[in-house]
Image (spheres, rainbow, N blue to C red):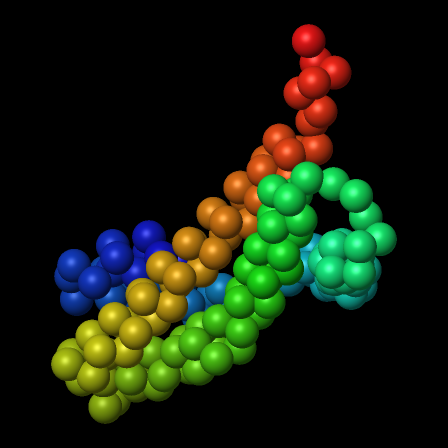
Length: 149
């Protein structure tokens, strides 16, 4: 979404495309059904993350400090993703659609709404990169280097 925001901000014609893209994406023609099938597993994933952090704080799990820090960062990041979607992406998308569609569409108001949405999407990209890196860090700190030689 971030790349489409940046691309569309360069031209009015592209902005019209972005409005149609957001409208299409809201309908979730194919991807929505896949997300609905994965939604029941989300509480289990969150419980596993919370359990890992709780085990660290209560001393129930012995591991290297880097692994524990990665567990905490992973949980905080997923919660930040949920918070960003709920407080910035969803309202920002609604604001963008109301500012950029219909008879009263004004370029200045639409540009401001797009800038706000672009910064929120950039935040999501950053958080998703962290979510990609944390399992690598966790694996790296699980390896016992003394036994590897």
